Amino acid sequence: QVQLAESGGGLVQAGGSLRLSCAASGSIFSIAAMGWYRQAPGKRRELVATISSGGVTDFGTSVKGRFTISRDNAKNTVHLQMNSLKPEDTAVYYCNADYTGVDLSRYRDWGQGTQVTVSS
Image 1 (tube, helix red, strand yellow):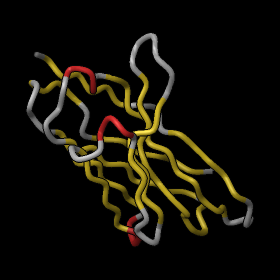
Image 2 (cartoon, rainbow, N blue to C red):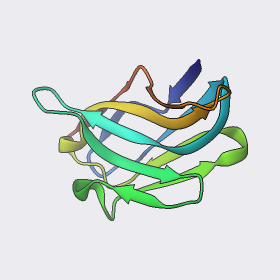
Image 3 (cartoon, rainbow, N blue to C red):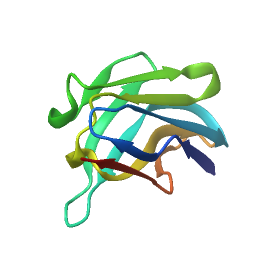
């Protein structure tokens, strides 16, 4: 129904920056919100940041003040700018989309995940 194309993951030194992007495509009528969650080894998946189509944002406590999220509604794309990265940010980052399909039903879907590794 929907494809979430993730990009921007990789290896970076502590204090550095990365920019993750996620583009949604497919049988989408509208998107309510998109964002990123992450899961580190041995830990549960947690919120990183989300943004609604109207620009309302939500951030996980550990990333507030360091990460920003933005969106391009016309392209169904969300960007996560990650600054001042710390080793504890190392995780697989998953894009999430909360959307209405062309059948007018509501869905949540996930990307395949992209690895972010922060070295010290």
